[in-house]
Image 1 (tube, rainbow, N blue to C red):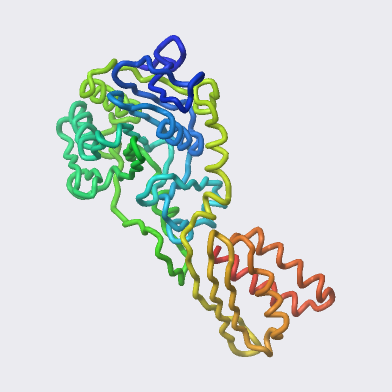
Image 2: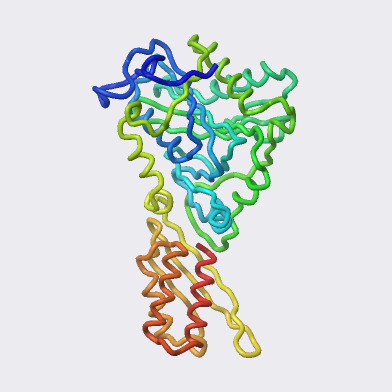
Length: 373
């Protein structure tokens, strides 16, 4: 049963002293089931941050249900250039988000359900949460063969991954969140979560590829709505709370004071790309010169998402050394992104406004470098 999440129906919830006069109050006696009315990945991730930072969960667990429009979400310590096809994402208008928990990269769309289990640090138990989800699935379809693995994934028929897990453990509170594939676009999932970039060296956490399947492919009655209601019912029974899914608006500052600033921070370039662990790219390509090909080598070190070192090895007779040095100097300190690389093409036009051949070579280099961004 869905009910609006307002002051009249237990809105004032579970708050500690960080929010003394607004937001959630300490009136709910046991726990709560929430569902976002937003499909914006940044807004929903901000809800997780807000609850983790502000809510007193002692004896009052919270289940948060949310779905997003198409987006790719990477873990806190991951490298987006390693994890996904950024060029394809730009072409398709797919959002990229970095969450505050660890774990691997996932694709979200409206056919994927996100479940976040909030507890105190002492009560944190990922396996218990996954067993709860399995019980909910078996309650509506007893024939389903779904098992939790030691890696805290859920497997369908012993081989198809339908859920992945990540978590954040704070000083006193913790949350475990997982996906549940219902009717997601598997073609998009596989193409977006495949990096085309070569020569990346990084210590960032790498995702482990898996064979996936939708629950709807197994049973067409297992829609997102059916699954969310079943999980909510099982959660309510397990925690002995009312079986109500309370709808929330993640942008409502009266409910969540300061939450919009959290959502804005999650959208910044500095958070999404700048938090990438230091990495390097070592690659090469060939250019046609006369009747033969010349090899161009490029080595780039990136720290905090910005180019720290850029070495371009090009034959002097193809690109003069001073021009090559000017290009390398232009990259230092710039963001590792196509927009800033495009801006660099204007530098040579100002330096050598009438040299079309030089412009062409400069543009070739810039386009090749853009191709690895």
